[in-house]
Image 1 (cartoon, helix red, strand yellow):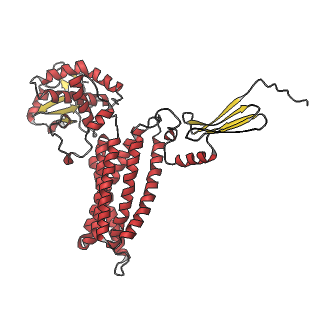
Image 2: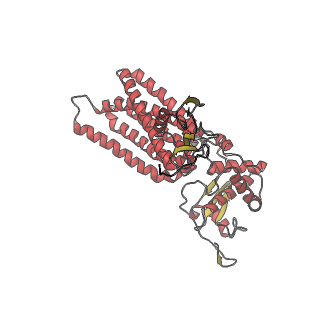
Image 3: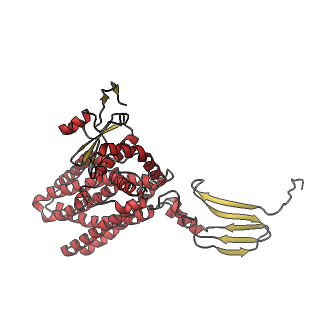
Length: 466
């Protein structure tokens, strides 16, 4: 025919792959030259094979069109690597193993929240006067404005006082946030019972929910960074938003049905609300208990150090997760003499008692650490840490570990300063290396923002201590 001649040199196999990136691909088709046509359809379950004859091609297709559409739907709600978990050996590499458990319980608690919200909103609108001829538009508008204004002001104040402490205690603040949300909805439900104090009750409820907004948003950001193993925090955050939206839609629909069935029956309303509240807090507790955080905060550091001093070994993040507390301190009977409660980091020098300041001026607490970026002072079993103005994140972690060691030695020794310095010189680097090999992040210590620092000069050498 005058065209180019082609020589068949055996069978040719082509594979078609699909995915959002080179690390998230799955095979969709395998095409092989042969004398027959074999179509192999693979879903996420074991494959089924179908054969038919057609000229010179063999087309082996994995995943049919229905499965492809279903995957596209799931991609709106679940990070893509999890979709492939049944097609890959081992858990997906893009998220931490605790992601699925946390999201399951978090979705359930969100569902119960929006069901309750419909009951509290119904009560609030009734108290404002919706449906009553005597109610005025301007009156209802003013009440709603005052309610929202109080909430916004409360959010600003809460951020001012606790904003820097949220990521260091993400588990506790996650629980506190949802508890405050429950209290806010309870205030809304109570508002019709106190018409003379209606404004005060709804403003207290709005104030409570404002704490929820700040704490929940901040802890969610910290947890998203924890879940993301492949710099896919944006993907996880987007999918979490879709899950939240779906839970909201389902919760509001179920809440509307529940509000309709319980309308005019106060006993049924309160029984439903309290039952959902108990389940809501249980689901939140289970969610935070699923979390296995590998960052170092005050409590996790003290647990790890106490075990290392006793055994020379480092606990895994899973072991520490089961040992650390998740409830607020006022809701637990935890020993007030716990090591991490006896250390005060970033203390203002002028706030120390006079004897402690004299210790520092006489060189106690810095005798062999003249090149260290911190000073230690003790009083009545407590240790205060004064940080140098040029101290780094590594210095902050080292100062806290040193203070924990000293607080531990103070119980059984009178020469705790020298013994603490000897322990740091001998064991600190070993401790950090074992932490890293055990999967812990040792780059920094999660702690509230340190606003007070200091500078000091050694008069023995007339040189500034760097």
